[in-house]
Length: 262
Image (tube, rainbow, N blue to C red):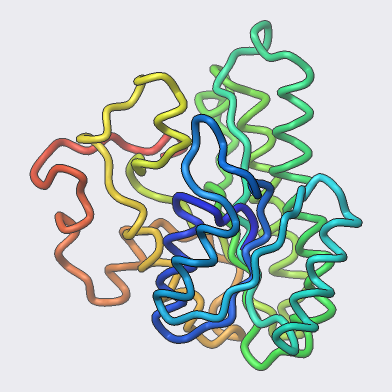
């Protein structure tokens, strides 16, 4: 799990922890952040309380050497890798003239490059697994100008993650490695949303649990029969037989905001 010290990534890991999963949290935050909750160590503690064996690993996924080291430590600790979740992401919703190149580079290095590099490092082990899955938190590909015009740099970076899904699903289809994307239908109340300065009010959002439950359904499917999909959380839960989506609302009954890319 990349970037799983908080938010959606941590909730997905906690859902897997209920089954007693072995989980490596590969994230950057080892010391408390002044504005964001959670570290790899607090996340590992929550996972172990939920029933997992957790391995906290400080990893900057912009550095392929740190990724390789984390993969090696995960295999040493748990004997292999069955699932990779590409959750780490950087966001900056700015127009072209308002986007510093430092922020542009951060988004592309974490989102597109980080997803590719982590997938590349895990694949030799996934190819040995019985039911291997790569799940990437990225949106469906849609080349309409509307999705680019207000924040082209961010859209390019997120779509880079989705293009990894598109390509790797086909590349490894015959080997039985499932490669899928998952994206929420509505805005999810996370620390990242809170960092946007009040632009989105939590009461118009859902909780990360909806994405976690959808991810769990995907990751428990036979990998050879479930690959190359750009899943939306609501649609996945429909397949899983879940009909009460109001349980995931921060404020049940409120009007929900559609996600940025849907």
